[in-house]
Length: 95
Image 1 (cartoon, rainbow, N blue to C red):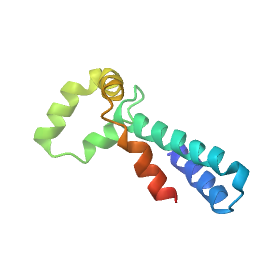
Image 2 (cartoon, rainbow, N blue to C red):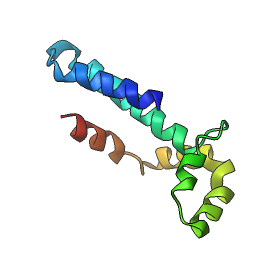
Image 3 (cartoon, rainbow, N blue to C red):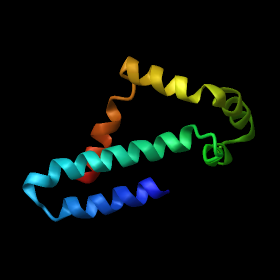
């Protein structure tokens, strides 16, 4: 939750239109949203349970089975380029 609030504050700074800092603000937003998503996907402190609470029972069981491998799955997806669309989605939302 904190990462989302930080990203929103950076977004407000981006809206100020300071040209030489806009790229810094954009990457700060991108980093904080990526951290927020990562924390929801896999977290040893139980925040990943947020995602499973929204799933139907059959998918919740499959998610619980894959949960220990969450970090490995994210790393594989990043290396395969399957998550390359995420920055463009975030940039489109910030523009």
